Amino acid sequence: MQSWFGSSSSSDNKKKLKEVFEEYGKKSGDEIRLEKKDLKAAFEYLGALMPGYKAASVLKYIDTDKSGYIKGTELDALVEYAYNSGYNRSNSLF
Image 1 (cartoon, one colour):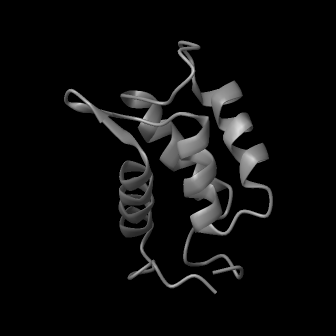
Image 2 (cartoon, one colour):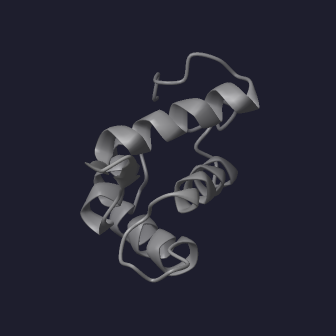
């Protein structure tokens, strides 16, 4: 069971998710960039059963500019995607 969530509120969970993704991303100027390998590592940390598949799905659906990485406002969409996919404290997997 994952213990990285400190609170059960939605905004706190989303903040923690964003921190996880930022930790696995690479800083490029003032923004964080997450390539497929970074996304895979983050989803692995979060306990995804198939982190490579999750990473590929994220790039397919959230990488709106098709740059090959998640950055800027796409990071917020990634957090929403992860939260809505069950990566939150109320999910029984955590």
